[in-house]
Image (cartoon, rainbow, N blue to C red):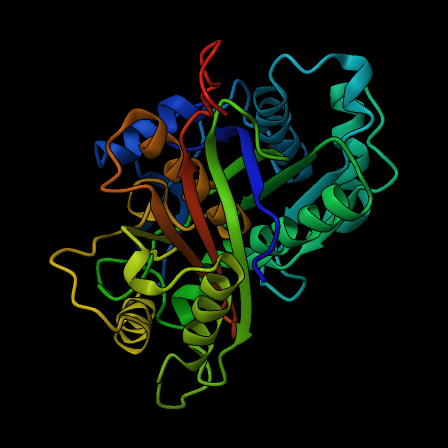
Length: 351
């Protein structure tokens, strides 16, 4: 028995390459990137490079996250009347609690500061999900429960993250994981905010989340164990089973890959272990090449790009597999499908 579908009704994004979802997704499609020097210097005496969002003022800390996040909430909610917004739970996705350089006060203050900035009170079912790159799939699973079991009209999934702090960048440089002039096997840190408005499927069609799967990878990037992609393979199989699909039904993969060979190898192994029918082409897109490693916002970038690609007709098909991986071993996969608009029968036609 497949799970009930969840519709992606609208998206919002603020990234280093665009201050809304259409411009960010257009930049991702065109492979446009906009890294710049940060104000921090690495161990080799050179400035760290990162993907920074250009804001009106040089805000920092929680204030910076709020100023990035408030616009994506307004964008995703679109023309939703102010009176109805209080009925929509907000699931706020942020960095995992043990990530070095995590913004101070994130769990205790960010939700309240966003409500003050926006000028309305979030629904009582709102929650904080501090699971980094796998937070958005977790939020999708929770949103499905809220919509189908608790009958809420919709759920707003919001993510905000910033890896452009001295403590974060110096930690990853010391671990040999940051892309620098001395290390080619690494990622460029970034910052971003994003939002997804989800609900029940609509007659107008659109992107649907058909399945979500989770697993743990024992040979995570910091374990030193030989990688077989057991966790990602299990997560993909669970997401496909949840959707009533198999890997050969998938037309495209979009992932949170941000430059490290470990995660590219994992994605390759997972395909080898799940694909049982030959495909002529099986592309994989990774938005991080344009926006950098954006932590908890990676899932929003992946799904927003899938939505834009399907709506604008440049996706190679209508079934997409998204997958995300956290450094501590958590793995998540999401099966997406673009549904065509429902057409009503003309008057007098046979039923």
